[in-house]
Image (cartoon, rainbow, N blue to C red):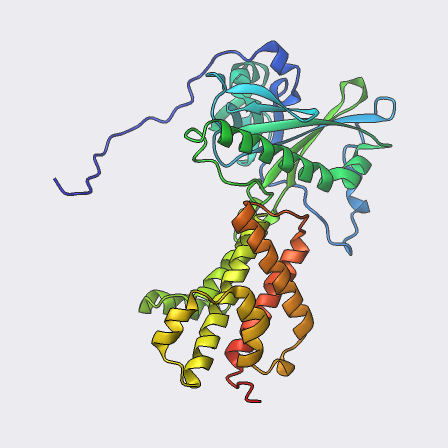
Length: 397
């Protein structure tokens, strides 16, 4: 038998847990109480400032407040299943002063219905245990239930004159706080049972959570629900980006020649990816890797051009730090008067270097870091690398 051998067997992937949901849990989430009809292709996203939206009419104008208050319930689905809690696929956890309701048995049930025009993207968001009741109550001719992975919800009560105003004033903060709660929950699972949590992604961010369902409850049992885009490119049904001719040519070149991708290019690309997904510390680590790799390359070329042997440089290289390369040796190897925004660029990269040290030595960023600060550091790294690779001259004074 060869070293690697794939012994194949057919596996039937079914969701067959029909155990009832605890009544106390049902009370904690409207998604466990009601089947909601939605359309996969209709989603609410952020409008550009110059788009006139008044003609579309207000959102949920038929849902009145309860003495000036609304109860919203925000929900999302993770890209994986969370472990059951003591064999229970539905449960609630307390995070700070809020409850998260967790269910691994929610469905998107696509359907067609008697007497209505068929739409292949219409579906009911429904719990598996409520599917039989749905079929008894609705004249559905065909159904296609698709299991969702772990579904998590959170309730929020706010004062507002109308439901749309509440959404417009709070949507971004609700999503941020929800993601923070999810991250704390996932970190707790990871720490409590590393073996069971090994498949969980290290951090939650909106690009992982492409869709949020938001339900609003008002007076007279009025309810409204809509799908919101957490990240429009992730929620879209087609690619929203395209490579230009030069980029396509580079892809084919890398594939055809098998050439190694330069370290700085790979690191900067990873930095942008980490930034997009909210891994700010890892983005800064990759930013520093990109800079240090090019600085070391330039400094070695500079020294060997002055007569230092490659052997001697290799012996000394391990003692040369990123700080020395950036703040001392760079000025020797290059004429910095030719560098655009020299002070700002070096300041931002030194800030990134200190953050990198926090990540490496303390395991996490020790300060409040914004995405804009990290983006500025990545841009500064790209500017420095472009300057280094484009300017072969040295400071001979």
